[in-house]
Image 1 (cartoon, helix red, strand yellow):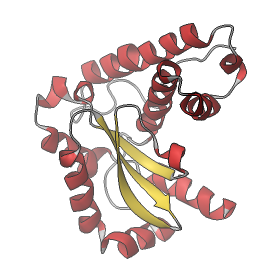
Image 2 (cartoon, rainbow, N blue to C red; image 1 turned 120 degrees about the horizontal axis):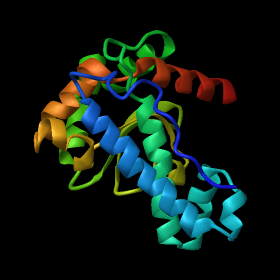
Image 3 (tube, rainbow, N blue to C red; image 1 turned 30 degrees about the horizontal axis):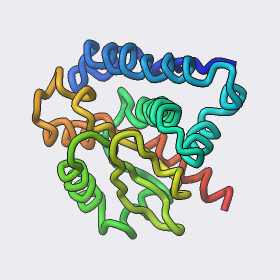
Length: 202
């Protein structure tokens, strides 16, 4: 079995003017695709090739196989990223997720401030996540290819803060990129779906 690059859940120009078609095509079609292709090269003929992507991430990390782990985790994280954004994004969460946001951060503004602070303080490359932790919500930073599932955290959404995610549109202004994500692109419906599934599973 070989891993495949997932299609974007929207057209490559669907997030304009917030993220350009050029950014999406480069990020998805070159960076994400590159991780998938490299992963397939690495796992061909090994015990990893018949596992799910998440299983590969967990086993390669446990095995200390950094090459497989890095490419598998980056493929997994990027797939989650595309769903974390939407052409109909922005606005406010609703229902139980809204209540959980208020409980954890005071209100939506508190969440946005905490998320942006985490994004700006993440040194170098990495990811910012909203996760469920012991029944509540918290914001989590991971560096490079690290991912919350290694620690049993259950992610609701993520933002890629590697420079390739925003440099073509925002140059080195990570703050503007984060503000735009929070105001216009964040997919609260996806986060709510994940939150509801976790609650049902619990």
